Length: 203
Image (cartoon, rainbow, N blue to C red; front, side, top):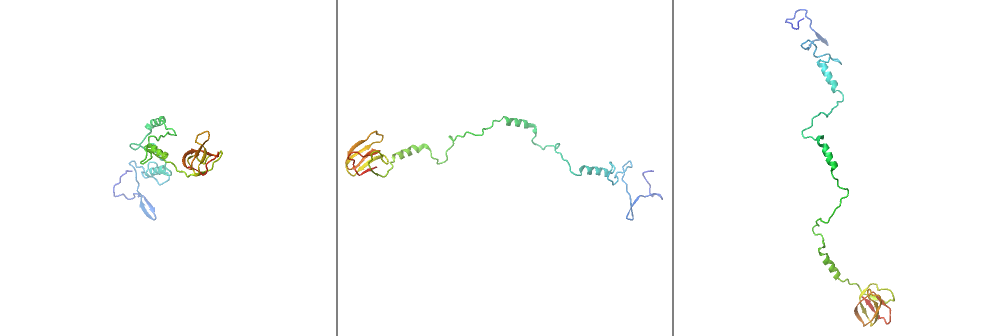
């Protein structure tokens, strides 16, 4: 039978319809040039080369969890690659590392503004050395062996008499006769000997 018809359609020609709820809907078929069905049947396994078969194949491919791989994706312009990594690793491994403890010298560090220096220390020491500390005088009680509470540089007598003493660093005693008054008198001991003067005060 020829694919083409000439209107009007002859009496007795069958027309395909589908009864849907008492209404006859004309059937339309989409076919290829060879006359094969291009749409396919609505089943779980439509023909592979039909529209429905191709849609079913797409669905099966993307259904469930998709596996995505970036291995073949192109790198952006300027992205780092492994091309030079071996050279970098080699350079790092051959680098000389600093020891854990570093010697630090502050000899050449600049002093902060206003810091004390050694420039005036000699003058300060000389000034301290030249300043005599004035210690309070104390009464002297002559003793046969005990030293004075501290070495004296002067002595005052209320009454004249003999004073037996030992000078700093001396190995023996000396005795002098002094009138009442005050005299320069370096000594570490004032001994009991003879007519020792009375009323002694050490400075």
